[in-house]
Length: 514
Image 1 (cartoon, rainbow, N blue to C red):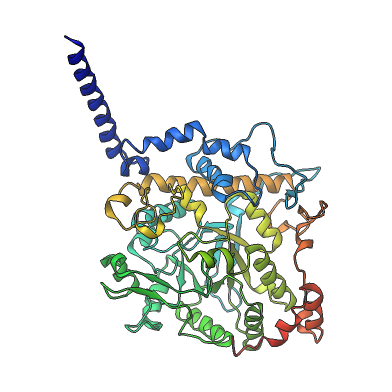
Image 2 (image 1 turned 45 degrees about the vertical axis):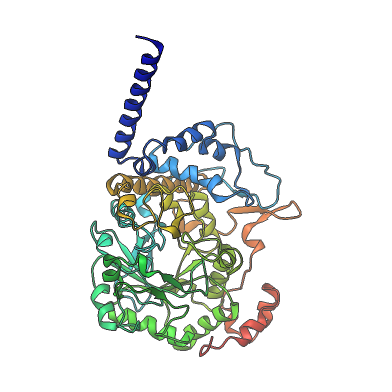
């Protein structure tokens, strides 16, 4: 055989080899990227080998200047896949730079709390069906924004791990119901799943869904971190028959979420709406989610609660740094108050009016690690939600194509072929492991800090280096309102002292108007 013939056979052998690899990629369901991009998808893994994300995690600190994806995505992948999350050679962070935070350990560490005890009961005096929520749960992401397979993977993982799955404002789909995981039903301004034909709130439709045993809590969405004060539109091209059925909207038309609610127009009406939903749901916990913006608006809600004596069972504070879906750049970067400041404001305000022990606080905003949970609880939260963490767990690679319907991993797309690459059974195990390993790390941190139960977490557990280079208590750099002080005639003076002149905001806040 001559050289020419040998070359032909060599090319044929390479063709067969690559064809076999491509066919194997297409048939497997462990790696969504390889399923959607047979053969060429291996380039991603080659680049990871050359400069692995794990190496980025080792070499780059949690400095706020470093993109989130570099600092913590690898940690999620490790825990979701059951790989070791240990780091050799100690910290490589410059511990003397501003904003570095440290958790203080005790000289006599205790045993780690049982993972089953890491829960908090949600439900005030008017709630007859309180819910024991995990300290770590899946934040709001709708069916429509996420694929059916992604929703099933998340809910099956939540069911196995015994934690909650927030539906997002896209209502409760058959994919949420399939595996029976606990659900928090989010009601947005479009009232999807409980709306009339003209898009207003329908009490009877709401009642039908709310009474389902799988629905554990009801969450009214006032605003969200990604685009606070902004409505949303799901284009008609993306409104599939399943989405139309789930949301109760016409097929072939844009699905619109208005910027504001039609069921209430003032803080006092919000309180009345909360009570209505609580009655319709037969006493299930009802609360609301918001990204703090105009502080006078928040104070108006506080005053409305005091005047009506109707209190939400919980409030979820969404940070402006959060948000997994696509949103206008200016809203993503410049609108709303960050999570820590918003959380501390809500917590301190409720302390100031004597309602903190009656209202639970959840929080969301780039929470992924056990330390993130610990920090949120130190600042004032009762539990934490995570969206992007659980998206990473089911395979999201942050391709930033969520709004194009071309998600390469099948997470954020309605394309049947693309989402078919995401195996719900396999990815649900990763959801479960990520949650379990993160809470396990949290329990270990509690033990090191001498904490037997998460209720013992105190405000002095975390120090933060300020801009002058001094370590001081984290909460000392945030506001602190004395208990009951906002009920006195000195409320405005106290707020001027604690919040840099916001006594005027308290004075202007009215429970009957926003």
